[in-house]
View: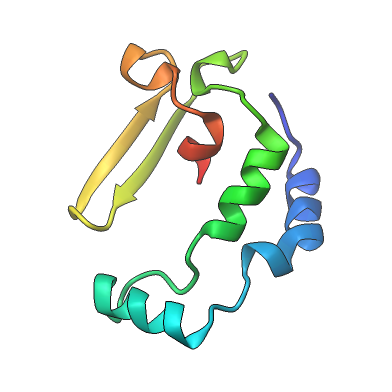
Amino acid sequence: MEMPARDIVELYRENGKVIFAKSSWGKWFKRVFDEGIDGPKYDGEGLEKTLKDVLENKTFGSLPKKVMISAYDTANRSPLIFKSWRDKYSQLPLWEVVK
């Protein structure tokens, strides 16, 4: 699945209020308590919903080209490298990898 950068920008323009929804004070305090003050500003629920809507049930391995995505696990303080051609990652939902 290819998506031009202009379409990604439009996706964020259309869904920005969902992706970057303000948390209630209770959710914010819980996140600070669970993850610390340096945790994420947004809970990710809006981004997850939007990505699921757009990417549906596509898997990482179903992409037409080999793709490698680097990420960082903030909880374990370690880098992650997702490779679409590796069995370990190929069946992961695409929305989960790009989130």
